[in-house]
Length: 485
Image (cartoon, rainbow, N blue to C red):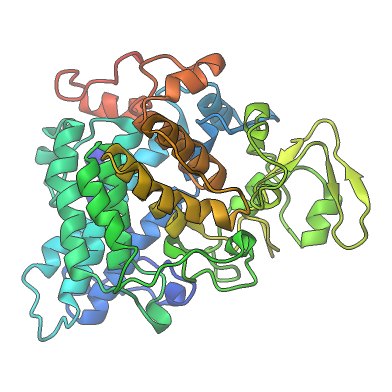
């Protein structure tokens, strides 16, 4: 979708469904007219749910940016041109993945902007949850912009509904401005308006803790470690009730409730609800009939996201996270019979079980995408404390994660040793949850980790979609990223 179209398209695509396993099945809005959509509290609730829906569409591809781009996963079966190009740093600006990513995020931003414009003058006696919807819209807009700048660098900063003429004059805004003027301000305002928790059918929507966790990650990315420490530390105390689950494997047991003590914010999915499922289970499965049949996975396999040898080499055999994180290499043991099934040599020889669940039809998995969870917060907090010269306090936080994994605790580390161990622990704990590439970039380690597979120094961001460059047709206002011309 081109820039000149998205404000018009949003009028058509505003109708959205929800993104929680509970509130996922709300009825759509009437499409009589845009103005008529915004009258009652329920109208604004449905419009808010439409913003979540846009993120659900985009996050089906987040593994390509957060995981395949990094050094832990790769495409072993080369029948996926876009994903292979992401993996090998050969993607070009005309690739459909980049165009859809750009368009998807600006649909989210457009929906949020329209909602915020319409709700500004709404009567709070009629729209009882006015502040709540504002908080949710700002949280989702901030998350969309956060992903955009991490993927593309400078992007158009649009915070209101624009005319066609205004859009055509809107160039790319520096990353620092996007952070300071929208991402940080939106998350701070969202945190002031969102509840600590939702109940009932609203579970799965953004909370105060989600806003603070993403704000903490933003501060980590911008290297404002003192502010990151403040935001992340708050999440370890009342009124928040976050705790690590005792068993790491329970995080990925989809027969259990995913909204547990470690849950902070997911992109929500559910099976058998008319297109509300996720693609992850099918995408990450190898071509092994016995494996697919055992787990009841319908709709086949995509053979994506095999594990690299370098990644497999960092694991201890006693780490309790290992078996659910990946199975390797070239065989699988049936848990019921103990029979060893050999993989065909033409399929991926390893896979992750983090999204392993029964699937009734292709792309209809109930496996959520974990945007952030409490272990992520604890490891960011450990990193922030260490960067702030509080290595002894950082040990407390990182060791909570180590103990849950059944690993020996760290002790007596220097600041540099702690920095390396936090990076390692994030790699082990958060594998294939969309963090690795962004961690490498923000810590300045991406080129060191990925040069051997084709990364050049300018490739910490992706090329801007060629369609956007062409439609603006002004290299001064809307240039391509350096190195991609």
